[in-house]
Structure formats: C-alpha cells, structure tokens
Amino acid sequence: MRFKPIFCLALTLLCGVSQADNQNTDKQKSAEEVYRLVQSYCGACHGVPSPILMPKEDWPSAVKVMADIAKDRLGYELISAEHVRDIAAYYYGSSPEMLGKLPVFPETKAPIAYSMQAFATQSKMPLITDIRVVQLYKSKFPQILLSDAENGKVSLLERKKANWQETTLLETDIPSTLEIVDYDQDGDQDILIAVLGRFFPPINLQAGKVILLEQVKKGKFKQHVLLENVPRVQDVKAADIDADGDLDLALAIYGNNQFGELAWLENLGKGKHQKHTLLDVSGGVNLIPTDINLDGKLDFISLISQEHEMVLALVNRGNNKFESINLFQASDPMIGSIDLSLADLDGDGDLDILFANGDAHDLQTDPKPYHGVQWLENLGRYQYQFHNLARFYGASKALARDLDGDGDLDVVASSWNNYWNEEGRQTLIWFENVGDKHFQAHRMLGEPESIVAFDIADIDNDGRVEIVAGIFKIDLLKRYWEKKVENEKAGAQILVDEPLKIRTLILDATPQR
Image 1 (cartoon, rainbow, N blue to C red):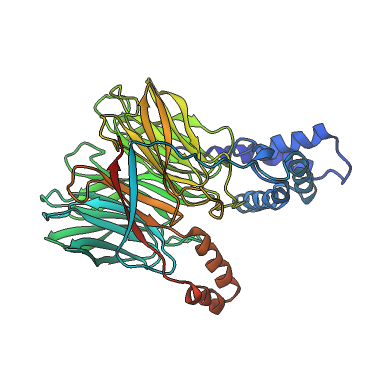
Image 2 (spheres, rainbow, N blue to C red):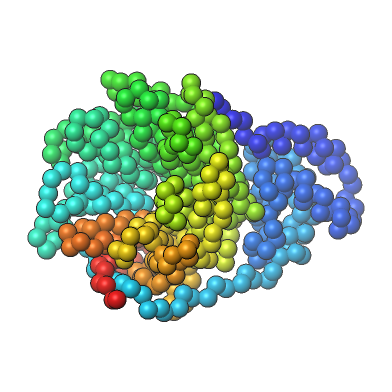
C-alpha cells in the first residue's frame, strides 16, 4: 500500500489561498496577520517551528530556504517576497539572540572505567559511517567490519597477533549502514550494504544502491548490485517479510526533500528482486522489521527525520498491505532525528524504542540544547510513553547493552556535533540502568571527538564487552566541501595540510566496584 505524503495535500489546499494572498499590496500588517501567515505557510507541510529553535540571526536565511523548497516542489512561487519578509521578521523578532548552553556531564563514581586504544591505520579525514563486530567465519577472535566514506570502501579488520590487518572488500561511493546475515541461506555470513552515493548537493541524483557481498568461500566475497538508480539509501535490513521462506530487504531510501521512500525489496529467487513502496517520504533513517503487535506477521518501525520528525509503525494487515500508525511525533519539525533502535529497556518482555536526535547539519549547524537521547516505553496497543535520558549535544547514535554485567540494559550514546573546545564535552557517554526506569549518566570518552558509528561486543574473549568506534570528522568534511565548491585546488589543499588522525578505537572496560 502506498501512502501519499501529507505535504502534497496541504500545499495543494494552500495554493488557491496563497495565490490570492500574493495579490495583496505591500502594506504594514498587524502581529495577528503575520502570525496567521506563519500558521498558514509554515504549517502547510509540517508543524510550525518554534522561534526558540535557532538564534535570531539565522532565521531570515532559513525562511528563504524553506520558501525555495516549496517553490521547487510546486514549480512556481508559493510564498511571495512580501510574505517571506513578514515571516522572517516574525521569527527574527521572536527568537533569542543565542541558544542556551547545556552543562557538561559531571564526573561520577561509575562502576566501570574505560581506557582508549587506537587501532588500524590513521587517515586525514576519517569518515566512518558504520562499524560492526562480526564473525564472518571461524577464527580465534571476532573481526571488525568498516563502512568508510572517506576512502569509499567497505573493509574487514582482522587481528593478527598484536596488529590489525585491513582488507578491502568493496569499493563504492559513500557506503552507509551494514547488515550481516546469511542472505542466501547457504550456511555462511554475507554482507548487505546501503549506499548513499553522495553526501552533498546535488543529492537528488539517483546515486543510491543496495549491494550484497555474497561469501562464496571463507573470506572471499562476490558482489551483487540488488538495487540502483534510486535516491540515497540510508539503511537496509534483512527479514522474511512475505513469509515465503527466503529473506527480503527493508529499505530506508533517505533521498532529500521531496525525493525518498520507505520500501521493501521482495526476493524473487535466482538473484531477482522487486521493489514495493510502503511510503513516499524523504528522510527515512531506518526501517526495522519487527512483529510489533505479536500477530505473527512482520511489521516495520521507522524513524523519519527532516520536517517529519516522527516514529512510525507500518503494521502488516496481510496481502502486502500495511497500515501507517504514528507512534511519536516531535513537537517541532527541526529536532534533528538521526538514530533509532529497539530494546527491552524496562525488562518487561516487550520492545521499547531508543532514539537519538542530534543532526544539526542543515539550516543552522551549531550544537543544539534540545539534542539528546530518549526512549519510548512500550505500553501495548501502539501506545508509548516518552522518557528523557539526557540532553546531549549532537547525539548521533544510541545502543542498549548490559555494560556492567548486572543483567539489565544500559545505554551508550555518541556525539558528532559538540562544543569540542570546551573542557569536559564528551563524544561517548553511557547511562547506567539503576532500576525502576531510571538511568545515571557517566562520562566515557572526550577525545578523539566526533563519533557516529560504534558497536558493543566482547572482542578479546575476556568475558566483558568493549566498545569499538569509528571517527567521523563532520566539521572537517564541511570545511573541505565549502572550499572545494569555491575552488577544487583549495579543497584538496585542506587535506594536504591536515595531520593524520585516529580513525578507529577500542574502549576496554575495567570494573570499579
């Protein structure tokens, strides 16, 4: 079943009104008239953003950008220059000079201490988009799989005595998330890769792909392109969606603005697949197969960002028909949703929703005091209760694992957008589950800063879990791209002048209690 995007209908209904409004002469408006304009235009395709989301100096340019997006979607000017000016004036006059600052996380007496060790090669602009601890084949220690956007490759790291050996498995532009699964059901592990294709404009190009690395013998892989010529693919998950005995694929095709969709790829056998669109929407971060209502059929849960900022369930009603149910909607359309996973955080036997919002790389790129980590408690019958873990600048990922070995789930969270020059800012923190749905925040790592991807597993067989993480230098990437747009040589020179940096690291745990 396909669901028509809400903004299309809203903009269509607004068009007749707006064209008449745009005939008005340029005259001074009352505060009430301007506020009605804000409600009409800014509320046409998403919730009306609060002025407190950005400092006042950034609102005029943001309003113009949103007016340009509306024009691109419709093919003509929806909002007149006069109304753009009035709306910008409203936000400028109603917003703060500066956003408030979050305090640093205090030092605590944590039950675990962590020591950091860099491993593998260094690079000038690390851009690790995913990192997974895997067991692709039998070996003394697990392997580590990297999705490396800087070098455009997926590589495998294996421990060789005191060193790590890195082997390139795939070369592709901007690989994103990885899924390790026996896709062809032949008894060994294969690798699925979601490919963005591009970071920056023009990102409406059909650069996205889904690639399968089929393990044909121990450590040897054959490449299959399962889907291509689509907008940026953010995430891929494998599951038997149609219950026919083979594995299909759930896809979050993030795209950009009006381009994107949530879809699933039906496995037809003999290497053939058919794409089914579930929802025409941009900004899909992931699409997780799960039986949300315990009826024996696979449903989906998805985090949708951009102007939507919501957690959505797609409930399987049979015969490849899915019903859309909104599980959570943020009060504002600019909170920067970026990551979602499922875990039984309260230990009551059902899956809760853990998610992070910390994407500030859009209209205004400063860290935001409303960034953070939170969870939605599953109350049953599609009802969820919001619980705040912490406000955390640039929260980029959150994972639930039992770190301290006490039988309940703790949470680790990373940051990629922060005030790194301020003492005490953390790129990794963890939340100790102290019972009764309460969590205590502890510092974990301050530098090297800017982490998007990490995994939690026992990689040295000592009975304790470690954290393996990859660095993603988003601030350097933005500087590089801005210079490259101005001048190709200037962009290249930035990297020439950059020193080598830690690319991957391990945090080893030592109990303190």
